Picture 1 (cartoon, rainbow, N blue to C red):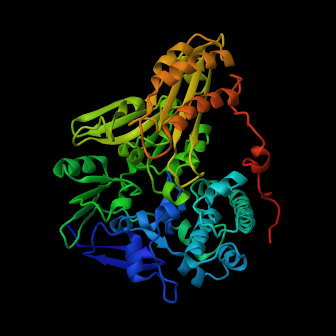
Picture 2: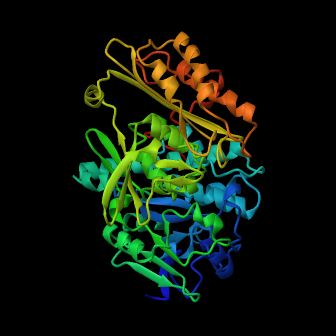
Length: 534
């Protein structure tokens, strides 16, 4: 084992030697500083927006991307071999960068922390290839939660800089196509911005030549293997070791919990991949929620919808689906949708592999069916195309999920509901899924009500008749996230909302209820790619 490692910080090599494995990157940067003449770095509560920095990484399809990640949730050894940038460095070394100029000219935030948070989120958005609609702009900036934010100014400068970036990208891709370099476009290797960060991103390849085995001065160990076989061997060798994925859960407790050894899943390529098959998506346990949303969310609108409400952009960029399932949170908002999507979790151990439906994965009180030495390998989600539905004996399918919480982002939900119905050729209900989280010690299904819906027509009468069974079956347990009567009412209203938004079985597009959508217009493009932006 080695007692040191390096990473690249603001284009300079940074060496770490003997420092505690439980220390976060934010704490390290606060002690060390980020850039001569900079404003310093002070750790911030992740629930208040955290301390985003810019990290180069590969998405689930192997394309280079900049991701805003919360340094306060990143344990220091997880930075080994990474390429990182802080706002201070970009602000001082790239004063003509469109994002830097926009942030400094617009009175969008007050205070250096809030400005740094906004700047990093805008930088990530500037280099995104898929940012084209108003709803995406708001999702990109959902980590800006300070009360001093001037949202009109923020949205104005965001639209301007993102539109300019898209115009540059459009022109660069046209030139690449005319030169026969379409492959580079698909690989994300076209430099469209012609700045320092863009050039480094296009040339980025992870430094994964060998496994990381790091030990600190207190003899605590951190391992980052590159294959699933090595990962399972380490888990068998160190049965008390803690598996760590994105770090967004464990990072919160880094100062309060002792782990003699940590084993990271981050460098295991087969766990990071998101595979697109004819009949299903297979999501690696170490794939970030952002990658899942970008790849699976394109073909599964409820998945994209639910992930946008998960924490904030800088958390989603690190949080993984395997880590989420392994935490076994009773309030987790993704599980009800996975149940409604009839997803399965695949587990691996030195003794072999097995799988189970998501609703059987949780056993209650924060526990799962995982055995000693076993870990989550992937999650498979059916692609409900015509062939898949026919094989299941169905003709149509409706699915959606709903979250209620105190605010839109960075907030634990009160109740989440995930619902789906499949219809036979005669348009009667063949099978239903009614699932909730935030009401018990695990995600639960209303199986009696599901069975009562089978064979009925999809109408208001059927919904009203099964509601008593839903209430009777779903037992509310006390917690600190909302009154029991309030959560009991949510069980009813969320299921009713599912019906009223999806009254027609042939159309999966939900009907917007109320006037809010007329003002929010999330699907409206915020620019014309062919229009010049100053």
